[in-house]
Image (cartoon, rainbow, N blue to C red; front, side, top):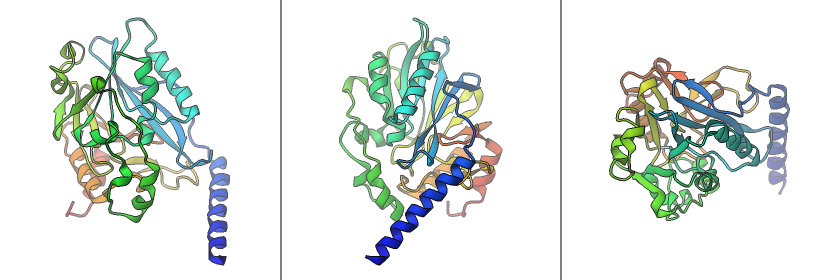
Length: 308
């Protein structure tokens, strides 16, 4: 009993200290609209709380990719369902897709964790013509056939944290498209499944790469015109002292272990991203600034043990 009381006091003190220091260093303001980081690549960035406390926020991004006709769009991820995030996300979507000819053609998912999919119900209702695509290894979590809590990971942190990753995303079958294999062109993969894809999304615009580890069907997306990778949770780029202060320089790190199934597989996937030819910038979903150069990312992966 005494040990339990000391544990609770320690946890309470730690959270209180984190809150105090976080309020002293509130970090960069988040844009409530979409910002064009590269030609045709737009990011909406806002915070959601990793824990139910306003001083433990995680910067979380959703992305829009402009199609060939400038009126057709692909959304990458749907964001969490917290009211503050969804208010800014909905305003950002309406700001970009503001005209009668603007169309959200496709929603693609990096993976099915709650902070990346909980905005889907509103999106599917607001944009009834949009299709939804995800990797085949993530399909059971998206169709109501499985939960992350059923998986065995390689860390105690995941063994406890996996119960926070519940998904309730049973999708209408006619709107769900499955991406297969390890690497492919989105236009090629959807041709024959969605009418008229090459007209608004030419081949050689957006590719996907299967990068398991954080989740079984985790994907990153390569925007070839801007030489950019939208990396989801393949890694993070946040303050070294997060959550105690955001004023220090962001650093490259593995994704949060609370939701990462296999940390070894994550590093293998990170090396695969680094080996992609001709990259300029890699953008993670949890990012204090605006991505990291491909050269910095490659240098980081060279520090991994040779077994990876």
